[in-house]
Amino acid sequence: MASAGAPAAAVPTLAPPLEQLRHLARELRLLLPGVRDEAAVKVSGEATTLTEVFSRLPLPSPQETQRFCEQVHAAIQAIIAIYYSLPKDQGITLRKLVRSATVDIVDGMAQLVEVLFITPAQSPENNDLISCNNVWVACQQVPRIPRDNKAAALLMLTKSVDFVKDAHEEMERAVEEYDPYCGLLNDTEEDNSDNYGDEGDDVLGCPNNRDLYWSEEDQELITPCLALVRASKAGLKKIRILVAENGKKDQVAQLDDIVDISDEISPSVDDLALSIYPPMCHLTVRINSAKLVSVLKKALEITKASHVNPQPEDSWIPLLVNAVDHCMNRIKELTQSELEL
Image (cartoon, rainbow, N blue to C red; front, side, top):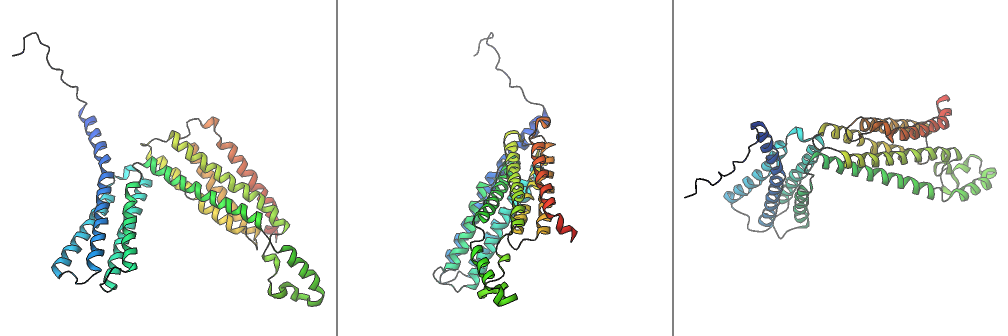
């Protein structure tokens, strides 16, 4: 028996009721990724079983087949339910990644089932194995899905940076390697212009070389276009760094806005990159440049006004906007004659 003078056991201080509920909600949401992973493993296992059972004779009985079908259906329903169970306030970017992974799994399983009932039962055919492997690959992507919207935003921004980087490098390679037959075709046309007249535009089966290389005017226009794409790459890199360093997991709406507008930069860069190849239409280059400038400046504005940019007055963004405007003004100058035709 404890002595009367012994101190009473300390009673733990409990958080207020609403705080406890908030903590419980946070813990439950942390369980979702684990549930996703388990559901994906279940689907992968069902794909393996289907492939093994229906790729050889004898086929299972109708009753066994019904059981297999029900198991696959239940596994797919479970993975779909997990997507719908993800709260919308967790962020649109994260939900898009989960939805994409879910669609890949469902589509992969549907393709596998189609291959199995089309291909006669025998030792596993390549199509069976390929289809099963597609399901495995899709399921293996599930554990790699980001756990929160900030991580999802960083993943998407990294992809955008890589896409723009690839486009810029391709443009630079094209400029370095352009017009390998320029001199040959020019000499041929000059030597044969008197003899062939208008046929000199198609000497020895070669098309007019103006369709194969850039004119001096084209090359002059390419310079600010390349600078504009470089600015786009630099802007995306800066945005990604700001999100990585200052992004807050609970600011899901602002992170979604940054990702949504940044996603438009890469396609706009691609359009501009494609339009500089010969034969170049200067008006198309101008239009695509203006579209890229509009998207890029909008991305910079949204980023500047968000929580990831804590010191907008000292921001690098105005400097980049000035550089972008300079590129666009130069493009306008070089394409003005196209508007006057």
